[in-house]
Each structure stands twice: as structure tokens, then as C-alpha cells.
Amino acid sequence: MHVLIDLDNVLLNSFSRKDGQTFFYWTQNLKKDLGVEPKTLGQLFTKDFLLKGPAELYASVNKYLAYNSIPLSADTFVNYWLEHDSNLNTAVWTWVWDNYNLKKHTFHIASDQACLRMDYLLNKFPMWRDVFKKLFTSYSLGVCKNNPLFFQKVLSELGAPADEVCLIDDNRENITIAAQLNIKTILFTDSTVLHQIF
Image 1 (tube, one colour):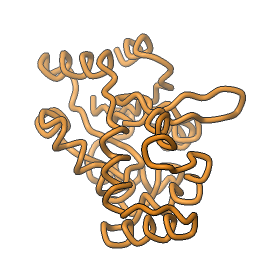
Image 2 (tube, one colour):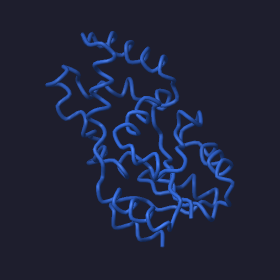
Image 3 (spheres, helix red, strand yellow):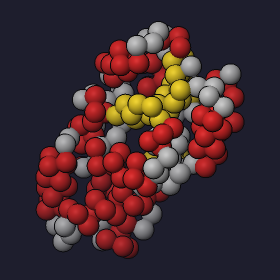
């Protein structure tokens, strides 16, 4: 089985949702540390942001900082974001690692990710390079997971029938789109759902 693992809120502890609001853990001390108001981040972190190359990404950050009169360099902001938004979900990682060593499945990453963050995570967690055979990201594929084209490209690159692929994702829209292409799916809520793949 080819297993597609999402990053944010699956392999990484990234955010929580309550009363229709999303709280990103990395922003907990953002205002105190950098003077940045978290509620303004929606101006920057859009789907389009996830498709940009490094130069375009930094240009977007500089534009956001200037618009909000935030006296920071883009490097300072980006480095803070990357460092604080990389908290591994150890329960999920342990499951992936154990099954990788048992050679039960072939693991891949399938995630809406900006180019810089994916590179940062691979450097922080170098074992990912061995465990995950392919890295399917919105930046590398040029499309986000809310578009069926993302999963069509994944299936094409894997060269595998859809019923031999399983997506583990916390986003219901992504799950629905993948299922429409006959990809097996598991809606992630916590690590206890991972047994469903068997």
C-alpha cells in the first residue's frame, strides 16, 4: 500500500480548532516575541502563498510586513515561523517508523506546503528522506489538495492504481476529493485511527 501522509495536524502538531476558529500553535507568543498580531496572518498565508518559489515567497512576506508597518526583516519573520511550526506528532511518527521498518507500506508525504518549509523540515528531520519515498507538495506539483489535479498528479507519479493508495489527512475536503478518485482515505483525528489502514 502507498500511504500518503499529510503534515499539518497529522505528522506535525500544528493547530487546533474550536468554535469555528483555528489557532496555530506557532503563533502563541508571536505578538510578544515579534510584535506581530496573529489575526493579520490571513493576509499572508493563502493558498497562493503555498505555490510560490523562494523569491516570490519572500516578496510576499516583505509586502505583508510593510502593509502592517511591522519593522522586521523577511528573514527574521520566516525563520521564526519555520522554527516554531515544526512540532512532531510523536505518536504518528512512531507508527510510520515502525511500519516502515516492517516494510508493510511505502510512505510518501502529501501536503500543502511552501517550498521553504518543506526544505526546513527535511533538514530538521533528516530520517524523513529515507522513510518517505516521494514528497508531494503544493509547491512541487503546482496545485493544492483542494483541486483533484493534485491527486491525479500523485497517482500518475506513483504509477499505482487508486485502490492501492491511502491518504491520511485531517481535512474533510481533501478526503472527499481523494475518495472521488477511488483513493482509500482515513480522516485523521488522532493516532488511534491509523489502525484503519489494515
